[in-house]
Image 1 (tube, helix red, strand yellow):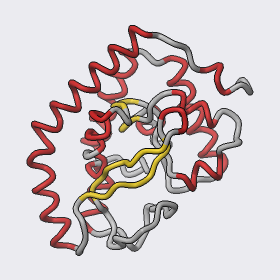
Image 2: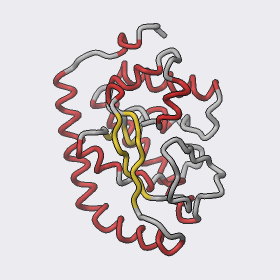
Image 3: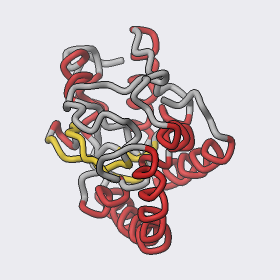
Length: 209
């Protein structure tokens, strides 16, 4: 992999425009057809299993390293979890409904609001928390992940590389998938990743963390 992080990015105005149109269209459809009833329904179960807000927003790193607030359903009992706290697969703070939401990725559905706002894309590298950025920012190729908008789903996610076990090998493979996506990104590739994501959700992929 080249040392120069910026070599992996290349401008394509037609693709960027098509991607934004897809993001706005797709996220709008999801919000008006799914989130309008999913938020109240899941919100009821979330509140019945533990006190606290239904939705939370966490600080994440976005396009070109700019921070933004990322929305998600609350999955833990700890309502006061700070910005640098990581949630592991076996975290005792996770509620029963939270574990189901995490396993099926339904906890990330509110991120379509972030897509509509322009902070995220439907497809792109996973948005990381400040603590992970601090750990890996100087690692080879890492900063190049932020030359595109982070996505709700992405190649690394559907390949089950997002894990609570952030060891060196897992990290390197995740970055490798992210940079491969950035180099090869296209409308066709994005659609393929969307379909792979839907399949993973239906299958209940428990390895994608």
